[in-house]
Length: 134
Image (cartoon, rainbow, N blue to C red):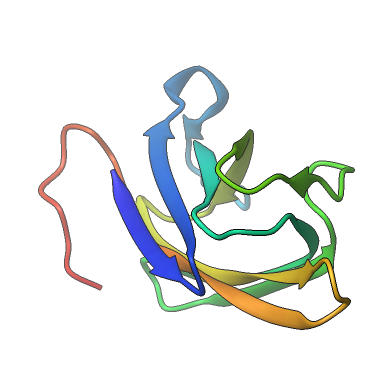
């Protein structure tokens, strides 16, 4: 599990390799490896916050970079009450056997002030391979 705390918001991430959705073959689409990840966001502050945006920086094991940004997560812009949490699951396909993801959530407090919350960098590695420091 990976975690970070920014502005009284804790983000925890648990990645998991998905062999049933992954394949390794020869040819133009030679590799496709899929990981799922579960994110849990804890509001440790005294007021409600709303998740407005997300930004992902993804680097695969070959050094290829993808950037993903947009509104909310999984079609939602959840309000997280003080002392409460919100969790969701999603996935990431890569053409290599490893990678790393990091990013941030754009949050808004009750007064309309916006701030970013760090998503801790987390490693995407095959379960039977040695972990690679990216």
